[in-house]
Length: 293
Image (cartoon, rainbow, N blue to C red; front, side):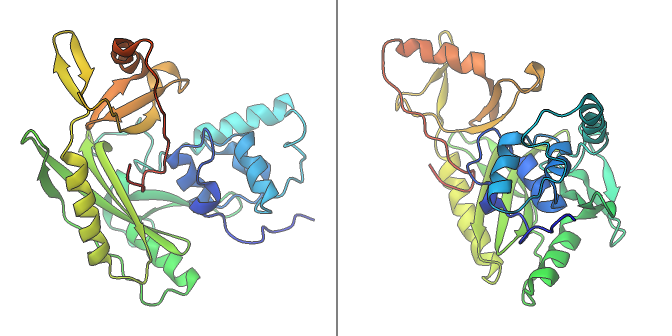
């Protein structure tokens, strides 16, 4: 008999897990797999992550796939399921769809931008595409947060230190006993460019939390880490580079794509800039995107 997990998987359980993207973390929290096999079916989830969740008692392994190689049939089935259920939760949809796609929420029926849609459910009962507002309402009801009220924040334009204006959109996500507000630019309908996040208590005033996020955004926009030099982009004089790690799809996800100063920088481009400092030392610090470096 398959035992149920002791409690739901939360983002805190996944924080700092090597190789696990935020999209895959969001998928685990939203879909709540109960077995290792169900988790491995999900796009971006590997055995290191399932080993951690097993150790926490949040998954079971009735098929024994954590401690043995998958059979060819299991591997093929896993790949078919992964392709069928591949949903980029950070963008709300598979990138193969139209960039301005509006998706009708299966719960409230409202047409919603793809980046605000989450595939929610389980393998047993199936999945529904629901908007963030409806998902937050269901989460609040499950967690007994009677006072939680979803707030939709309108887009805001903020200038960076060069005077260039950036339009930010916002998304509110309730997860476990925490709430996150994300700020991001849109290109072709997908979140990209400058991205910021703040996490707080869902019982606090979300408008106050939003104000704190705005202050964080202004601080982030006040610095340029890269400058245009005689030989192309170079690291700025303070020799500190901050950014966000994403996936370079041109290399099948084997190397990162970096978002620095709101622009995509390939691993090779950063390497070329670093060669200016051949023989020097460096320090690499990795932190959750809600933290401020």
